[in-house]
Image (cartoon, rainbow, N blue to C red; front, side, top):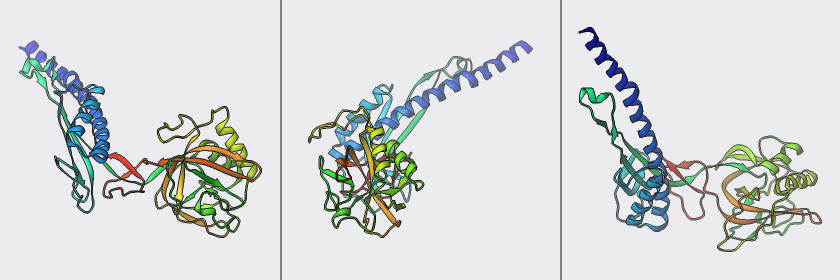
Amino acid sequence: MLVTVFLVALFAVGALSVDVGNAQLQRKKIHEATDAAAMAAVIDWVEDEDATLVDQVGRAYAMTNGMTDVEVLAVEPGYWEDSTKTFVGPLPTLLSLPAGAVPAVRVTGKRTVDTAFARVVGMTHMSPAVESIAVVGRAIAAVGALPWAVCDSFIPTKCDTITLQFKGGGETNACSDSGPLQGNFGQLTLGDSGANVYRDNIENGYQGVLRVGDCVDTEPGVKWGPTRQGIDDRLKGLPPYVCTSSSAPPDNKRLAIIPRVHSLDVSGKKEVCINGFYVVSLDGYKNNDKTVTATFLEVYAGTEVDPSAPATPGDLWAVGLVR
């Protein structure tokens, strides 16, 4: 009798440690797959507004990440109301969003996991279920930005040239239309002031997080030596980038993020406030007129999303998971 009791206890412990552990592992795997599926599908939902295509994209990404079609229970396009933390859907098309709502896709899944020890007590399988909801909203952050700014009154299109650092004025950046502005030449103080920090921010990008609404100081003075050193180190050995309407962005350190501000028309070291970010390809510098130029590629998609604010044309936007 004691042996029988201990065997039951042994199988119970085995069921907890092995079967439950395996079920949790499988749940984690399919949750990662539904996360990827929801984030891919919501982009298509915003771009194409086709519920059938959203379902196809979501299932394709889930299956690419290890799920079977049967395990994907539903891919539902709709919208997310952040005030109530509620998903509304499925919807056949992306209608006018209510105030405070953003486009969203919900992907649900379930996997049947056979048991080993729990069969002794009649449990032949476990069925962990998951739910992922991804949204597209206004993005609010970037990491790795370069220490220059572009003014928001300059509205670029793909392949336009942007002057990041200027000296003579009149370059293709509305910040510089009137020439050097009280000793400011497009430069920003990111993290700390000083030539070494400025040069490192050019070579490696500022590694802190910058958010829409953050205010940073301008970096007065040309600082041409650190500028050249930072660019030379960043672009050393990289091939030139030729931009066309269909070209892919460069897959190297020419690719960069630039803060967008309202104005650089301030005197000396003064605050300017960030209202967005651009993705550019860094061209290099012209030594004769002490300018730095880049090629505009797109509005940056960001690293954080505000789930209560839909992106509008020209806004920084991002994809994020809310559940």
